[in-house]
Image (cartoon, rainbow, N blue to C red; front, side, top):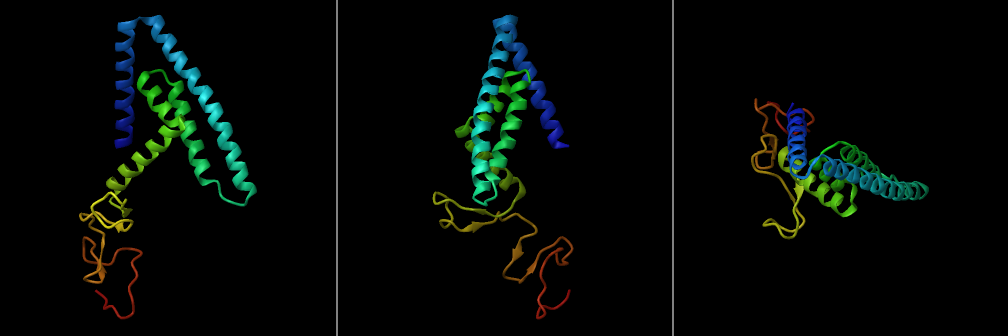
Amino acid sequence: MPLLLFISLFTLLDFVVLFSVGSQIGLLATLILVLATGFIGLYLIRQEGTATLARARQRMAQGELPSSELLTGAALIFGGALLLAPGFLSDALGLLCVVPGARRLLARLLAQINLRLQGVAYRSSPGNTGHSGEWQRPKEDPHVRDTREGRSRGDDGQPLEGDFISRNEPRR
């Protein structure tokens, strides 16, 4: 539900910006800008898509799984769809998905946001206050394995599904 709400608000804001810019610079200039960003985006997608496909084939020939190339291809498809949609905000986000340096920055930003929202462990960077390169967990996660007690803290005190209970640990 929150994703649908976000998409709806983004689309509404995109049209508001498009109409505001169109009222300031005129209909013809707005159409030219929207078409130009679409053609530039298609050109970039073609260039990046060809390079990504070549890298994926090379990795498959070496017997490796081209996982990063698959993610890059997904970002290119998403960026291409945004570039074909009319609007300046969708064009800007689409270009972020298509341009290689911006795509890496966007992926890093989304990974950090996802880790904070999900509350999962993350590896700290040397610049953080924690020890360099150690795995960290947010303190407020209710399903964190408590190493002092030797058991998981579920809401009802029962072991969480998938928890390992050793033979020496008493049943609850």
